[in-house]
Image (cartoon, rainbow, N blue to C red; front, side, top):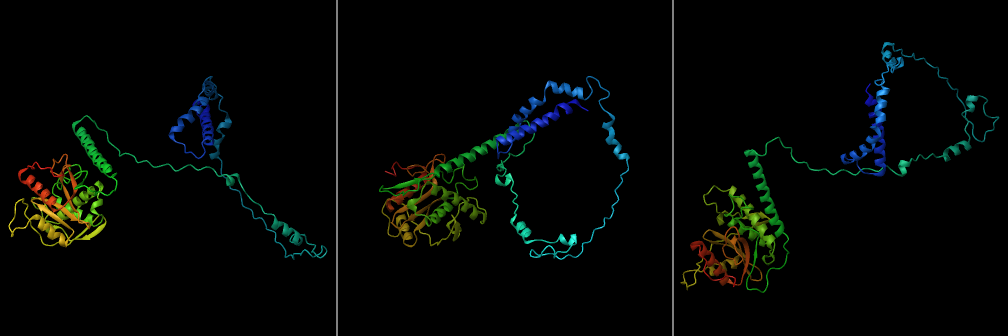
Length: 415
């Protein structure tokens, strides 16, 4: 026998159980965690692990001082139980006494009328005894029914991180993997932060008494942090179509920064859906004829009606009667439809005429705060309210000059 089991661990279990009971009384309804074990065990440890208990353990087991007679013959009696035969007791049948038929007596029967047989007399019940038996109702109620035990609250589940492996973080493959993971996390956080920031924009009426009013999005169609490499920079036709669909849901005069962001994101989604169904092409741009008639975006299904294409010339000089200016072509289009897509070389934009005859232009390309083309790093998509058709002609001229010569005339557009 080991001395620690006799005088150390035994008292430790006893004191630990007492400490746990005290803790539960002081913290009703609370679940015990591993953080509470140290304090509970500390109280029990100081009481069990004492010098007196250690000395008593050696003395009780006969180790020091040596005691050969620490075990008596009575301690070994249990090992002799297997040597004795197991004698099963014989079952004896006990005769069951049979009762004779007895006639019960009513309460109004006199004692003389009752039979003299004691077995029959035991069956006599009086109305008084019956009424007392019915009135006596026993109610078993325990303290637990009055005040139930407190129940511990359900512990919240925590998501655990994925299990890793043993590795040397300073090696080149491991270091490169960690750096790529950090870059991906930073890129995701930056994109989410931009979307969360622009989502706080207030929904207010954008149109004021200014000659021109514009709204800038948080990014443009070529932003690398938002769009994939195989789609960005080529979704202008799909994004212009997305803007036309969105104009049927919400009035253009009430568009906010968040609305422009949704139009860009859904336009990129529409571009992917259409491009997957078309044969591969080198330039990657969509044609107007490739836009489907039925489009489901923003939880709404819209049927687009496509009419013939109208061509117009952008010029500041007097045109001949046979030539058609861009203003005349757009005016003819507005007579049949409220929205249209303007294509200038490889640039597609959406124009819309609201019920108040205001002209709105949505451009998904990189533009600055003056509405002019800007580098991809600083530019953003925009929605601009044009005063009249002359402003639309001027804006289209600025875009064409920038595309052909990469030079913008010194005229300030938003003067």
